[in-house]
Length: 339
Image (cartoon, rainbow, N blue to C red; front, side, top):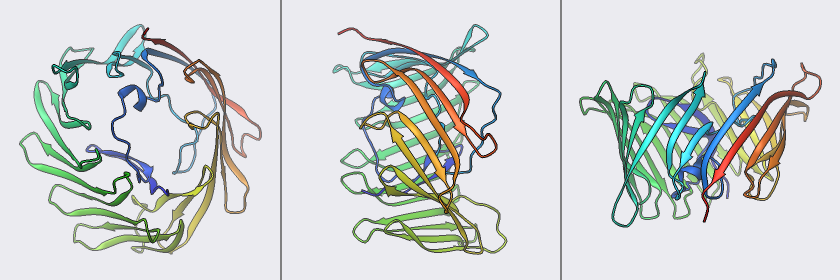
């Protein structure tokens, strides 16, 4: 199944990793979302960085971050602590879980370890959070609600400010297997920001950006994994949607960096992994349209019995470096719940 592109989005209201989300994975535990396998109890990571400065173009990430630097989990994989120790002091969040009579988590109350104040309250349903409220100085300033289809795939994500006024709406329509047919985002006035559609039978995908006057600023179409049309408003600055990635199969992606003249720079990114589950990359190489290597990352691991890494070294390469150079070394201590 082809996945839609990852266009990197980090906004106050939602985040979506850019190669589009086009299959959803409901019912993961917090530990699984943090890429930890097995009955993990705690994780602690220390990192040593070299003086190398690493930068890559927008697109798929070559150097994967450490998802959790210092976390604790209960026996069912629910996170109870998350953050990082700096100068001997832990900074982050403590999570208090509330369970029903069957042991299912129904609420999470999240407190800041520095102040002790509650910063977030999450209401949990069968498929994930159904509501979450963010607090500052004891007052709510953002509330979000989530609804799901019968298969556990998110349908609507609504955001409201502290007065209860709706400020954002993300709507998704999915097939039973989680393949997304349509996704759109609207702002506080209900105005559509962007629309993405995918016809799985025809293997045709389209993307459209809208401006405040409901006009089109950007539009493109991909057929069978290849770009067939691209249009962008003349003289427009770089915008969300003009850099995207298509799955080319065999752990390879094609990244399109497009411009309003209709010209797109196409790169190919290939990953190799330690094993079939593709959790830990062995290498990631980014080549230009002529096949020349432009950026690369290489990983060395020590792996425990649950296939989690306990030590990794990340090496990078660019033409400017001329040879593989150590970027960082990560050591991870993991404890597990005993059966």
